[in-house]
Image (cartoon, rainbow, N blue to C red):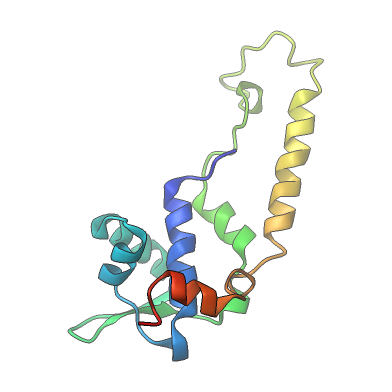
Length: 146
């Protein structure tokens, strides 16, 4: 299973803003430069994260974005579930397009479904705070300690 770049980038935005000291504002431009992601693409992601109530955006010359709630209240598993739309791991996961002749007797579908649920169960054990426990190292790698 592979997550969309959109989800990856959304997690990076939350990690970046979560490591800003004293809840300082971050800009889309600086996040774009750190991760080499287009500002336009990040703008769409930030808009979505704002709609979800995960980041707060402040307009204007001194504006930017920051976490809208504490990092320990942003669940990684729930975020990934809400950003990812397709969990069709195999053809047989979709009744409408399933043409596999062994589907009625095949246990692979059930095994992969069980693995998918385990995947989310693990992700739901983590928050953004858990992902930034090594804040100093992350800040250094993202060039925040200059």
